[in-house]
Length: 256
Image 1 (cartoon, rainbow, N blue to C red):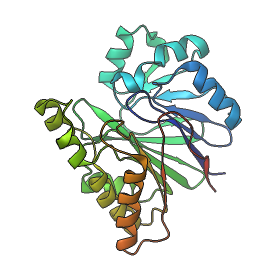
Image 2 (tube, rainbow, N blue to C red; image 1 turned 45 degrees about the vertical axis):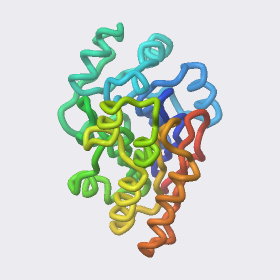
Image 3 (cartoon, rainbow, N blue to C red; image 1 turned 180 degrees about the horizontal axis):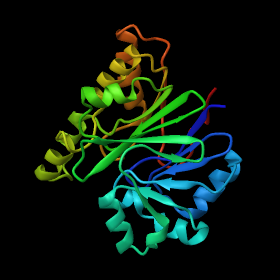
């Protein structure tokens, strides 16, 4: 049996991704209200209370982890920097599982890899039953190494945060904030996401979910058209693209 993926919400107001096999459930980050997560898990027919896997310590990714752990006593898998931050927020140390390299949650192999962001941040590959799903939602620059690590995936969830011209024209943003967003340690632009999508498609990826869109500097239609049109122009007309919205679930994708 393969894997399933569903974005429960993706954006600066909160992030959470559901990954599951037939026997194991994992949430990547928990920045959404627990009541909303509960409703989503009920819709998905979640086989058991999920473990949590953390990408990094920004509040839109870990803000609701303490509440989720209090409610369900879930294990939280995280790197050292996130471990320290979650300890400060009151998550009991015995629920925090640090790792160094690949690890297992039930029948799912979890493969962390570092990505370029302004705090220590990880992407993840999830493998089970011959299927693989990769997630990288806060990444300022996609290196060839990261492309290689995600290239054997059936589904990739990748950041598509902003349109560069909208960032530069945003009168509400300071110059320092604009520099941060546009830097290689900031967030991934639509154009950069499209370039990475072409590379991934060239290595066999057939499904791409666009994540972490900016409310201020992007539109779902713009993100989708930038990536889909670039893929089409490169000859990849068979790659499915979906935008993960901030306030509702995507479809549930199952890789068999």
